[in-house]
Amino acid sequence: MATFKAIRIDKAEKGTTAALAQFDEAELMDGDVTVAVEWSTLNYKDGLAVTGKAPVVRRFPMIAGIDFAGTVEQSSHPDWKAGDRVVCNGWGMGETHLGAYAEKARVKGDWLVRLPEGMSAREAMAIGTAGYTAMLSVLALEKHGLTPNSGPVVVTGAAGGVGSVATAVLSKLGYHVIASTGRMSEADYLKGLGAAEVIDRAELAGAAKPLAGERWAGGVDSVGSTTLANLLSMTKYGGAIAACGLAAGMDLPSSVAPFILRGVCLLGIDSVMRPLPQRKLAWNRLATDLDKKKLADITQEINLDQVIGTGAQILAGQVRGRIVVKIV
Image (cartoon, rainbow, N blue to C red; front, top):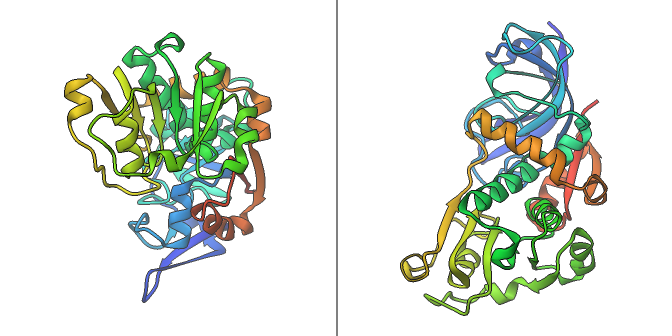
């Protein structure tokens, strides 16, 4: 049986190890579609997995990587045939199912989304789970009833993957975007993406009051913890915050005051198990609502053998925007 290159994670005496290795095709898990992977990406969760900084991986050995774009090689699924161009993200890839940092992947056909027309595989992975999560957050805010006329929107972790795409999409849709970052040196970068204002995350770092002055009608938060608590306390009456990350922690040191005194809503964003119709909607909206030039500007490319080192950098806050991984 043939082998292929992959980033393999194994259980070690203390924690885990990750290395670029040859993986036997016979070890691929059950699935009805085999895909030749061309591009992947590096998300915050991938950084946690390849460094072993958090228990993301649930089975061993594991191939890391939570999303890919490529071409179907073999299929027994009625919706897919050899030659189809596809995108896959979530569904436990890189956690419980062998993932995307590999030349081959075998998955369930029900997990796949057709590559949107006019979007290349590289562009799809420049968006990746981070950009897809940003769009799910925007869709949730829209479903809540938010429009550009509602008032400003805040994006935290704005120079990161989710934040960069959220800033670009919201600004293109006509929103006044307030970008919060711990890297004020990135202010010009964020304004280039469409941010109307850039604020220091220190403004959101102190202990949150039950209610503070109303500053925004909505927001996209990938940080969590005290930052999210402050966002909620500063949200206008009837507004909403989409929570999609935990870069600062899983805790939420808030109170019920924003919810019961201002009617604020906290919208939970899960990207992993999202039903297929919502996935298709998000990817199709990304094809129309994300400026391709801005996407190119926020994207840098690495090879498969650079993933582990760059994974440590993303956790250290040293990565701006999005990273695509060239598999072949």
